Structures are given as C-alpha cells and as structure tokens.
Image 1 (cartoon, rainbow over the protein chains, first blue to last red):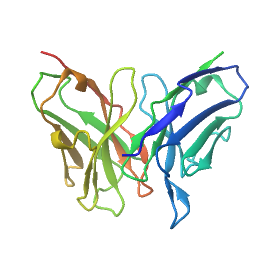
Image 2: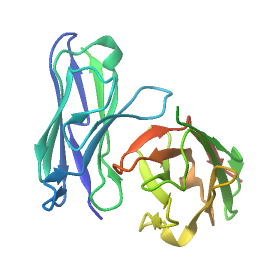
Image 3: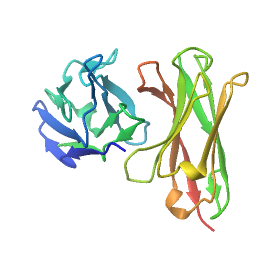
Image 4: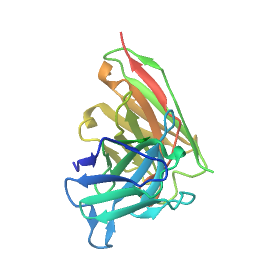
Length: 112
Length: 119
C-alpha cells in the first residue's frame, strides 16, 4: 500500500492570505513512462461529499478557481490556495491513484 | 450530467452482512475506462477507499478489507452493489459511491449514506 501523509492537520489563515497544504507519499507516484504524477486533491465542505479539485498533481478541474494550484512530483506535493476566500473553508485531501487509491488524513482549513 | 445515489440500510447489527446499492446515471459502465468505486468515512475522520469495479469487470479491493468485501455491477439497471460481511461498530461510517473516470480519479460522488452498526 502507498501511504499518504498530509501536513499540517489543520491551519487557520486570514481572508486573502495564502494557504499551503503538503502531502507526502510513502513511495513515488510518478509513472516514468508518461511522466505523470498520479496525485489528486479533493475538497470536502461540511455535510457534503468530496469534490475533485486537481488531478495529475497540477491540473485543475473545470470550474475550479485559479486561486487553487497544485505542485510537486515524485513523493512530495503541495496544494496552494493563493488568496483564501470564506467559501474555501473545508477539509482538503490528497489521494494517490498510482496503485489503487489511498487518501491522506485530511487538512482542515479555517479562517483566522 | 453524471449522478450517483447510494441506498441501503441505515442500521446494521454486529456480525450482519451489509448490502449497499449505488444507482448511477450519465455514463455507461460498459464504456472503456469507466468505473464505480466505494469509499467510506467514519464520523469526523478521513476517507477510506474500499472497492472498485471497472467497465471490463475488473475488481479491486482495499487490502485491509478484501476478505469482507464483494463488489458487483448490473449494467442494465445502472447499479453497483457492495456487500460487506461481519459488520462491526467500527464500520460505522458514511458510505459513498463515486464515478471513476478514465483518468482514474473520482470525478463525481454521491451524497453518501450513513450506516450505523449497533446492537
């Protein structure tokens, strides 16, 4: 199994400020033959199912605001919210899909 | 538009077998690359992938739960069924089904169904 560890578990950010969430996998999720990282990010608001934000480590889904960006490769990844908005309060999960599927433990983002 | 909806009992007793049904629309599970997954989330805790069935009848299971899970599909009814044997209170969770796109991610989720395991 590939384990996914996120940090921090929670963070509080002022409106308009940057939020950064890290995700580390226990083994590389970079598939050499196509040079793609099999890493996704999901957002889960209270009482709602998760929503896919980013796939292939950095490709935003249609309709996702461009303040959300993903980066990283191999085993270390980052989700950045460049200017936090009130509607971004949620728990964020990274997920690897290189070998079956595994989620991180989640990072709760709140307003400071 | 892709939609999924989970259905099944809200309460299960310890040792019982749980059967959940995912009814979907907006895609065909006979089309190349498509799949439906089950994921669960205990109250206040993280997501855990359970099982997946693909368009070509390939099935995948979480290694830690493999012995207890069975996933099947009925393409004519547009349903995917998950059975989990020997239920325990620690299996109390919201159970989601999700559409797995050809790019392998879970692009659309149902609203989830809360299953409580208690005697």
